[in-house]
Image 1 (cartoon, protein in one colour):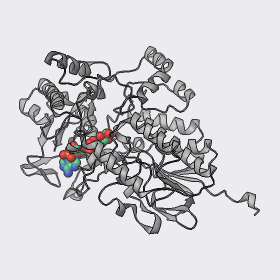
Image 2 (spheres, helix red, strand yellow; image 1 turned 90 degrees about the horizontal axis):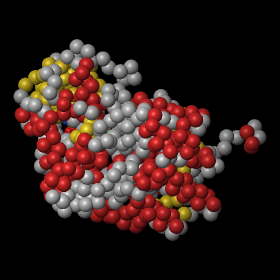
Image 3 (cartoon, helix red, strand yellow; image 1 turned 60 degrees about the horizontal axis):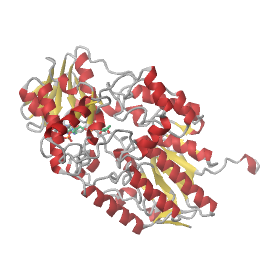
Image 4 (cartoon, protein in one colour; image 1 turned 135 degrees about the vertical axis):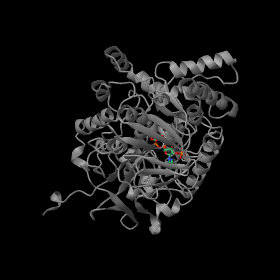
Length: 538
Ligand code: NA7
């Protein structure tokens, strides 16, 4: 075989074929780099491939939660609802994969188990569960923030006579709850989205709630032809406005403190956000200090509690659903629902407080709390994810000197800019811990990271450098900054997956960067303009 027939050594190996992996592949190809994606699922889609539970929907509006890199794509794709369902988002992702001919460089059904950096060759080698290995100069971890489900480890689960499911590993063929007594464990976004739909079908739904969370109505609606035409005509402005907001989502913000207005005005603003077109995260923008000022936050919390009490007819159930004072409003991801609280007015729905009476075990016939047994035919776990770090720690990643990322991150994730980690050269994380990530419009943040990483790779190539390594001092300073900014807010107080509180034993560290999308972008630009300050290129 002559040299020209040899397969070209790969420039970029990408793990994950969700939004991040697909866009990284597209961008790498455009930049003239050879790239390949390894994906565990049997199709593209990432978290939108696995989370097929009833009612699964994005809590960011479709018009924002979509790629902006190609104007034709923007114009040709039509979203049918304000908040897209999982099947529609998955169709969109598949459309992107096909439209840009990405599939030929994506290897499906391939779970990466190990990634090792070879210091001599300055290349990464990855190994898969099937025992294959492949290598590339650069490794991009597009593994997602919500991709490792928190497996239920309740005592006795294997003895349960019925069927059980996890929201993040839902059967493709769906689940028929007709005539079934269903137990739903977990009342985060997944449980809150699912409950109304299961209740409509099941004979009885018992919701096991450990912590009451805040939920606001989505005010979801179909996007009619006129709305679609208007949106498409004004896409550039919408994107530009979104980029300048703290979370990269085009939502109207009120730039006043909740304490600077009269009681009537405050109530009017909250009502407008609750009832008005779009609902959802608009509530977080009702005032500019809801997440930094305890008193302002308490106003928002009380408003939502008053709504719960007005909707839920049984006063005891309403009180149980009201989040308590130790959870500041919005510090755990706000749930965006369609008829969640109303579901508890149905005669076939019961709420059980498993904070007061914890779940002790799963039994043959159901589930036992310290107060007694609940007979159930189906158990649904909506118990969340090992968020942000789970998918990275699930791979045995070895950097310089064979150091394991898992060990380096034993006390919490350490990154420079949420993109790179010292001691792991030529490795980049898309929307990693220490970047706006899950606090922002993920698709926007993914595009920004991928563009930046690709430019950094090209910069290294252009200056004949083969190694890109984040420095330890830059990383330490960044981690300090991330914590400092978070500590100025109320966010770290909420026991949420943002701080790893949902995973027993996980170090409590506020993982995303809360400084806001525009400020973060300025930092990225400064770093790049300053010759990629903090990175050693050699
Ligand atoms: P979340 O938001 O982490 O919610 C998980 C829920 O499961 C939450 O109510 C937990 O209660 C509950 N949970 C977890 N373990 C248990 C046990 N052992 N017993 C009882 N209840 C338990 O995950 P989601 O999937 O809903 O949403 C994740 C994100 O996906 C969401 O924020 C959106 O960004 C999309 P807890 O609050 O810990 O007491």
